[in-house]
Image 1 (cartoon, rainbow, N blue to C red):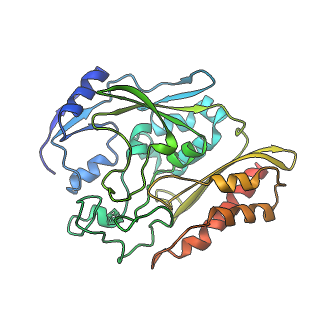
Image 2: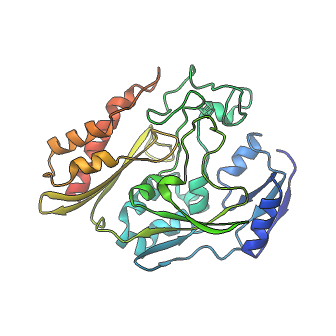
Length: 326
Ligand code: SF4
C-alpha cells in the first residue's frame, strides 16, 4: 500500500476544503471498499480525509419524506423503524448486500460510491479504461459473465455493484451534496453515470463535493415490495442481477409501480416503461411477463453473460409476484 497522510476534521467545510484543494485527497468513512482498492494499488490517494466525526448519521423525517445522513451505517438504516415502516424496499435491499460485519461498517454515502467489482479493474496488470483511461477494456473480449447488458459503451461494460442504490433509484430518492461552490441536490437517477467515453467517472460528483444525505419522498410503496437478488451463493456475494419491485394495489389492480434492476448497467437501472406497462393492469403472471418483456427491450449480451437475457425477465416476474403477494 502506498503511504498517505491522514486527517480527521470535525467541521464539514474543513473536510471539503482539503479535498477540493488537493486532487490526490479522498474522503474515507467506513473504508470497506477504498481500503481494499488501496491495498491492491487500484486507488492511491496521498491524503485521506476521515469524515467520521462529521454529524451526518441522522435518520429523520424531513418535510414529507425521510432524510438519511450520508454516514448512517447500512445496518442502522436497514433496522431503523421509520425506514422499515415508510420504505421497506430500502431495508430489503440493504440486507441483501454484503455481510452483517460489512453492513456494520459501510455507510450510505460509501455504498453509493463503491466501485465496480469488474475483475480487470482490480487487476493492475490488465488493461482497464476505468482504472487507467486509454489502456483498453479487458472485459470486452475477456471473461464478461458479470457485466452489463444495458447502457454500456465500447470503453467499459462494467456494472455498478450496490444493492441499496437499486432501491433508492426506484424510490425517487434525491442526493444532497455540499462542495466548494455550495450545496445542491441531485436526483438519485442522475447521480451515477453511464460509461460513455469517460468510464473513469462513476458519478456526477464535482471535485471536492461531499454527499451529506439522501432524501426519500413518502410514497404508497409501503407494503407490496420485494428485492429479488440472484447471486452465486446465499450471502456475501454481489448480484448477478437484482430487481427492486414496488406496487401500489387496489384489490388486484395495480395503481402504480416502481421497478429497477441492479447488476445490469454502469448505474442502477430504472425501468420506467415497464412501470407504465403495469399501471391499471391486474396483478397476474401474464401482466408481469408483458412488463418484463418491455423492461428487457434494448438489452444486449456479450460472450459470457447471455444468461442475463433469460435471467432478467424471470427475476422481474418473480420480484413482481412476490411484491404483489406481500
Ligand atoms: Fe475496466 Fe470497465 Fe473494462 Fe472492467 S469493463 S475492464 S472496469 S473498462
